[in-house]
Length: 298
Ligand code: NAP
Image (cartoon, rainbow, N blue to C red; front, side, top):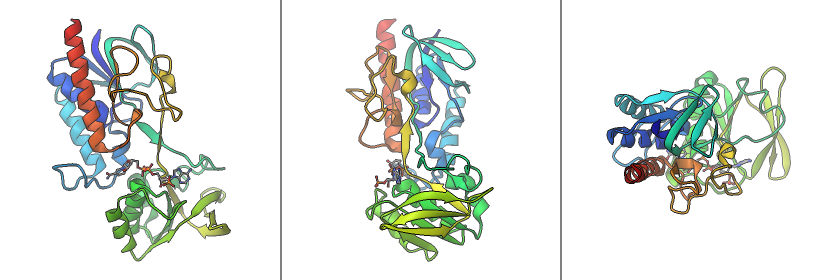
C-alpha cells in the first residue's frame, strides 16, 4: 500500500514527489510517456525566479534527477482509471494507495485539419526544440500566438531559412518582450488574422493554404510547427472528480478534488495561470496537504 500515488511526472508531479519523499512517505509516480511534461519542449525558460535562463529539458532533467536521488519509484505505465477504493489501474498493473495526486498536465492541442496526423513526422511537429534541427536552411511556419509559438519561432529563426509566424488574431498572448525579440529577426514574417485551412503534399508536407484576412494564400513550407496551446486529458478520472466544460479538474481551493484524499496539481486543474512557477507551487501544496491529511488519518 502506497501513501501517495502521483499520476504524471511533469513539474507538478515531480515537485509533489520531492516533498513527499523528503517527508518519508511511500510514493509511486506513474507516467505514461516520459518525465518532464510540456516544459521539456520549452527552448528557454527566462521567468523562473532565481534561474535567469535554462532550457525546459535541463530544468526537467535536474528535477527528475533530484527526485530520483531520493529513491523515488517511478514507473512508466499508463493509468487507465482510479477505482472508488483508490486502486489505481494501469495498462500493466493495479496499485493500492491511501491518497492520489493527479498531475497529468495537458497535451498539445491539434488544429484538427485534414492530414494533420498523417504529416506528423513528415513536416508537422508540435515541438520546435525536438525537431527544429531537421529544418536547417528550410522554410518553416509556426502557428500560434502564445509564448510557445513565439519561442518556437525565435528558436527556428536561427536554424531555418525563413519562418512564417501565423496567428489567428493581431494581438498576442505571448509576453511583449518575446514578441519584440521576434520582430528583430530579419527572416521572420508575421502573418496575422490568418488561419491554416489545408496541409498539402504527398509524402511530406510541401505547402500550407491559409485564409489570410479572408484571402486564400498558399505558402511553400518544409515544416509546420503547431503551437496552439494545450488541452487536458482528464476524462478517465470523471468517475471520481468533477471536470469543467473544457475538461480541467475542478478544485474549489486549488488542491482538493471532490473525492477525499484525491488532490490535483498543475495544468490539469482549473486555474488562471498555467506556468512552470504555478505548476511547482501546486505540486508542493498538494504534497504538503496530502502529508497533513495522511498524518491526521494515521
Ligand atoms: P496559449 O498561451 O494557450 O496560446 C495558444 C495560442 O494558440 C493562442 O495564441 C491562441 O490564439 C492560438 N490558438 C488556440 N487554438 C487555436 C486554433 N484552433 N487555431 C489557431 N490558433 C489557435 O498556449 P502556449 O503558448 O502553449 O502556452 C501555454 C501556457 O504555457 C501559457 O500560460 C504560457 O504562458 C506558458 N508558457 C510559458 C513559457 C515560459 O514561461 N517560458 C513558455 C511556453 C509556454 P488566441 O490568442 O486567439 O486564443
